[in-house]
Picture 1: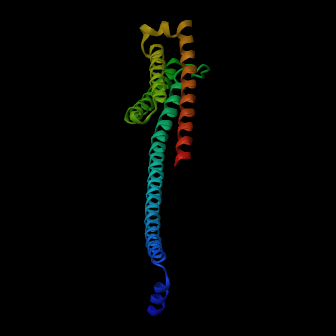
Picture 2 (picture 1 turned 180 degrees about the horizontal axis):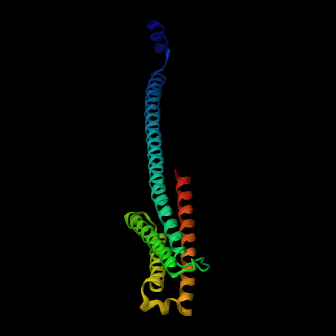
Length: 203
């Protein structure tokens, strides 16, 4: 084998011999470069796979977290909305006797205070996670519910303020607050749904 190689090289001119050696070395160098490049490319691809996996994991975690937060908010908001709607509904059915009416109103008072306090607690606890738009609407709806409750209290539990509560102006304000609270609640629910849809598509 070696004799054949030596015979072949002995018959070649020095220039051809030199060119052959250099060509062989160049081929080896290029093969090593190609192998190195392949390994670097594989490393980059693996790194990208890890990054995508990490982003997907983080997106899923964020979706799960915000889902729980918005579920709590929606639940407490709807409970407060329902309780506020029953304080002084536009169409109301009450017992004939004033004492019986007062019993009903005290129950409405308790139900609203409990629901509103739960809503306020959830709203404050998770405030950092809400968008600016949702935060502003929550603050607005909280103020409207407070004002609605004040009108309710004036009419049923504060004789000195009852005249305002049952006046045309007071009745109109009660109606306006009911409508505002309903609209704000629907807007917040829509924003929550859109936010969760967006996170779901990213997860």
